[in-house]
Image (tube, rainbow, N blue to C red; front, top):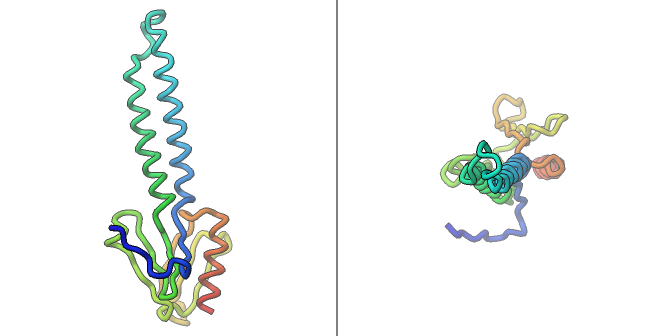
Length: 154
């Protein structure tokens, strides 16, 4: 699905890179465990209780799955701010579940003090809207997202 963006310089893309950190660390730990199991299997002739080298394949497979998920979280968009509005992509099946909130629908935007939740209000009475978690986004990028959304709405 190689769709090209019409004007990529006019959009701000925020990924789930805040969540990816944990999966990168998990992949590193699992890869280290796999290497350790493979390396210690040389001493099976000295101590037969040492696990067989084939057991290193289990943490290696888990490390590959974790690294693939981390790469996906790092590359794929979570929120894109465009001149048309805010595109919100869910974790599973993002192409089918993508939600576009046009700027005309947003009467006001608020971010809580911890910068972990963005609220897009559809009316001035704040009776309807969307709550969007900012935890998947890296902490240093949340301030940029908040400033961009609030600045655009005001």
